[in-house]
Length: 367
Image (cartoon, rainbow, N blue to C red; front, side, top):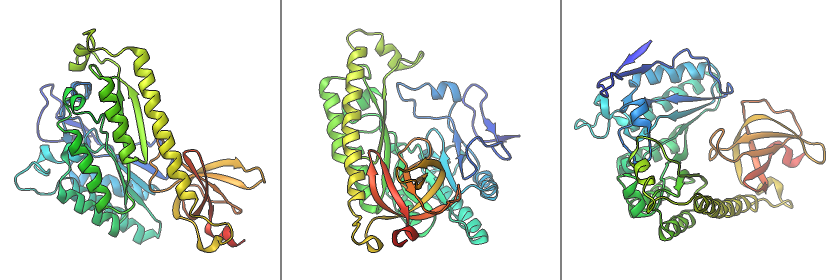
């Protein structure tokens, strides 16, 4: 059943199929909830607008109904997705750019969190709501305040996925990102100041046409300054029909394949060092001489069995609030008792293993 929304994209794409009643391919305990389809940003490297059309927001009542359905079907975590989630509602008179300011993403987050909280009151099961794919130029102070309030008062986790793509003004302009490096830095600082414990995931493109050594260094400096909790890096690859594809055809702008690989490796080496340091810092809060009263305590969503440790203790793979499914690091939980898959377990972080944390359930600390 198609959901009719306002506006056509010139190709007759003015709707997208409802996700209600779908067969989910993810494990039962988490689900992706699509809030929109298409994108109006027209970044120089991206084919999404030509393939998926202009931004079409799913009506709020349909999103609420799907959230309710997913919670009833066992989802303990709802990940809100779209090509540009921070523009939600602009095309249907419910977004930030609408003069009536009738809701936009803050209202959507309040609505989905209310649905999840209602389900929790009914069945007593903890739930998370997570925001993905937020476009950096669309943040407003009102949204940040609303996000912070929901993290403190509801089930929204203090985690934001913001694909930044670069940190050089020259590259951001060439990419048509509608945002500058200073604005991005200000945004990250503002988010961290207002939202305690915030985890920020981002992605970058290395080797975009015209990228100089100075541009690359600016990106490295930016990553080191902000110490993101998670970073993905992609070598630029030409997409036919995009402005960047035309730039790549210019030998004066094209970045050699070897240089792309080397720059990507430098970025990932830096991020690995930062991530390992962060994991070690969290683990160092645990004192084995005082296990009951030390260590970072986290609710961990148990996802699967992961074998046994060297001493024969069963190990489970799970995630804390700062780890999105399928793309981020994990928490390896060593438990003396069998843990139910798809449920939350209160744990203490006792060690780290590279990107990942090692934890034990609180009852095991004094066993």
